[in-house]
Image 1 (cartoon, rainbow, N blue to C red):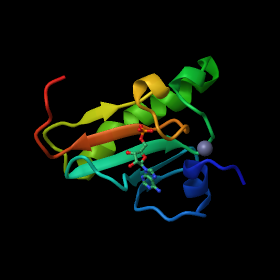
Image 2 (tube, rainbow, N blue to C red):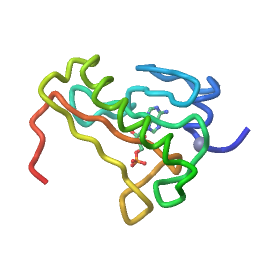
Image 3 (cartoon, rainbow, N blue to C red):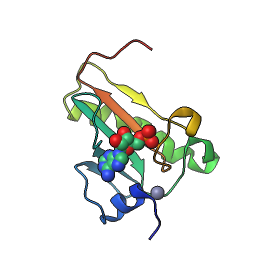
Length: 111
Ligand code: AMP
Ligand code: ZN
């Protein structure tokens, strides 16, 4: 198995607090939440970052983004949420398996 921690979570080798799963994606709560609600949506396919995506990933990226509002609502974020995709070391990415953070329920600082 790959050394990628999110691939291990997708494979069930490392436990997670699951939010949603289908054949293409898994969503689970962040282990170090920065707000009352903080989960991530990840493709089951290993993709290192947004920077390594191409047009072949278009449908997958669209699916993940469209899932964000639906799952956010299901997690109680009826008033909105923040999405973050950290890309590369310069973007603060720590886990090199593409993921979209969905964050809410607190007092977001203006960006
Ligand atoms: P990023 O900085 O965008 O790469 O974010 C990686 C995120 O993964 C961080 O917010 C971590 O708290 C989170 N994380 C790392 N390991 C785990 C894990 N085993 N389960 C859930 N979240 C994790
Ligand atoms: Zn991976």
